Image 1: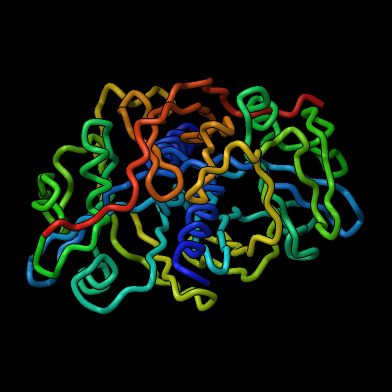
Image 2: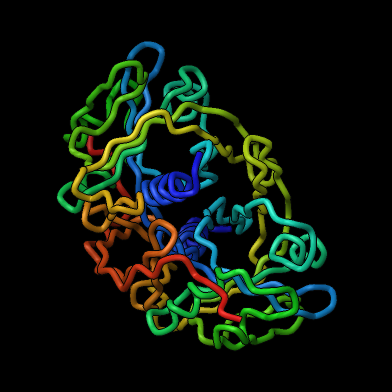
Length: 197
Length: 197
């Protein structure tokens, strides 16, 4: 399969899956170097305990997202706002070892007590997770990391009475395919669906 | 944990994960009964082979999404349009065994040769998958089903030259939390990010 065809296929299969959550994933190596990368493979796994999954592509051992999560156990997930979605995208470039994506793209690492990973200061919705399980997918060499939420932050005025965070009001960005970014307009909030037999 | 608190927590943890792909998942039982349910836990796993995952919550054995996938191997994923998002939401009500959600909410099952699961005729972007792997998550009793795409359909005029499907042009809907639906406005399509050292 040639290079063009491989990219064409990648774009097609990535985009047909619909709109995705856009997260900046922050980690820190044992040496204290900060790493930041966009991820759109986040999925909800359960609310009690609060569990979520992310998919990580095959990578070389070392100071990268997977290596840092495995060695240190913590990572952060930070929503992206329209005013820095281009910076978020730029973290997906291949930077040489030793260059922090935070500095390279102009985002600010921020720390909270007892969390061994950097948050993105510019984000408004932030989660910290502790790795609970690593699942190796033999079908294609990817890895699913299941994490437990141990910390979360969001704007108080975006919390609705039913417990939902209005992430459109929080200006979170969604993405599609490998490089396309979108804001949203609410169609409706419908409440719990009931059968009227 | 009381009932209100459980729902509050469910809404909070579901919504903090950001915008999600909204899919109507179609299956068929061995007896030929059609089942349709909304899922927002779809995640991309790889493009070659074309693999994706969905999370299924614990359920009783029988004629439901998980039971049908395990007994028959095929399922469909259908994007939702603004003109039927309320019908899609209504499929999440608890219908008695023997009632097809297609009929109950007013959507139309549609079949393609050699696919043993119903598509949603009203959808514009449709995928059929064959189950490749079942992963039991012991942390909370959920199941991840990994599927291989064996068929896909989308409007021809939404296919871009790089292989991406413009799913905003296809009018696909995204969702947040357990009951909120959104359309999108494109911020930008940025192309492949490069390091300029």
